[in-house]
Image 1 (cartoon, rainbow, N blue to C red):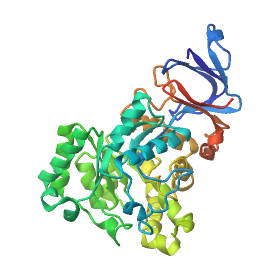
Image 2 (image 1 turned 135 degrees about the vertical axis):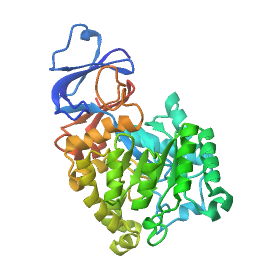
Image 3 (image 1 turned 90 degrees about the vertical axis):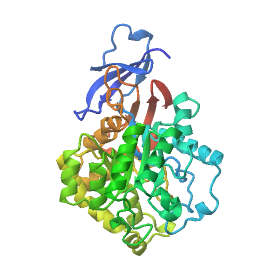
Length: 416
């Protein structure tokens, strides 16, 4: 397809400035121009013109904490993947081929929801399913968000991994193995979690020596480190050893906050608030009443995040929406709800939440110079949203409002 001009609507370019009446011109896989007003320029008579009247033209969304190998998606709920209430999914795990097919389905559903890129927070199982998925999407074989793939989530359990593998040497070997499989990032559970064991969020699962070995091994192998970190000590271990994405952080103390702020240009955080909100308020049909949510730690974590993340926002720490979608109470495809929770619970304006999901998303993808913003030379990832999400962020949760989804200049969806 030749040149495409989006005209007649408002433009939110992802930088945080106000939306303005304007046009976006796409040539090939790149944005050729972003210009004010609605007067087609000379030469546009040969272009494909898309009328965006009553709509907002904005960058594609980026999921900053993706789990595309988790089994539940909109229209495909898996109640057996709901620890600790129901873990029957693991009694009949999919084959590698089946798991890849599941992940491909999820990738399409996430793209249908307006997410044109995704940064993985970890694969569900060992193996290289996410690497295969990433490469299939990149080649155009499978529709889905461009992906940064991450290894399965490694704890430091001697029963699961073998005592010889939980040493600094074993950890170095593990990271080298995951890099050799082709992953962009390696995921470690630096802290445990209340879902797995009572009080688990306050249990640190790696020593300072092991965390340092992980940081050194990742640098040598050329991969990033992601981590699940709830308690203050695990957060500090992550920051001091060069972890790039530090997830949850629910119980960060003042020292941990100071460290996160000091290194705010080197790392990203993501609370995964959607799963906490769902467990506390929306998961009764899946066996999670309020008492169960309290035992799972969800009530306490949600309260802690509501207190913590406005302070992170004030300190300028890069916080990404999304995370832990793929459970039956948080199916993949509902990811845009996190933006609403950023507004309702953390004090973000709708425009700030959009920046977190676009411009900051381009940064976590390590593509800040070509992704997440509508600007000349950037990749043409474009959403046309009926209405104005800078005023009503909830519009993004209804796929019917996404009248155009463009990824890299290709029209994935166009509602005529």
